[in-house]
Length: 158
Image (cartoon, rainbow, N blue to C red; front, side):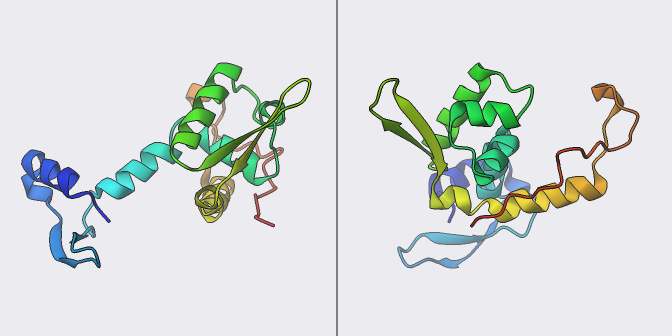
């Protein structure tokens, strides 16, 4: 469901792409036809999961990594600072939980919420797409051939 205020702002800034109100939901809020190219709900979802390293972090969590060091071990090149930032963002979005076990030293574990587990099919689909169509780019120092070492396992929710 789209936020009414957001839809009004969109109407002011992009009048030619206004989604049409097609009905009302059970709370009386307007429902919109988002069959066009722009949908604020879709755009927000892509912004959340499409940030650099977020897909790899979600894939690591879906594969069973729970500790900060577990995630950094399976996502080479991800800095501690950026992992911390992304985990906080995902926690704020309700995708990741952070559990603290009071012990010496304190044990912190990360897990996925039901909202996070719902992304499993998305992550599997992107993994499949990457295995089929992905290539390394010249910008990455690659020659256009895909290097798939370590990419065969898809996350699967138990």
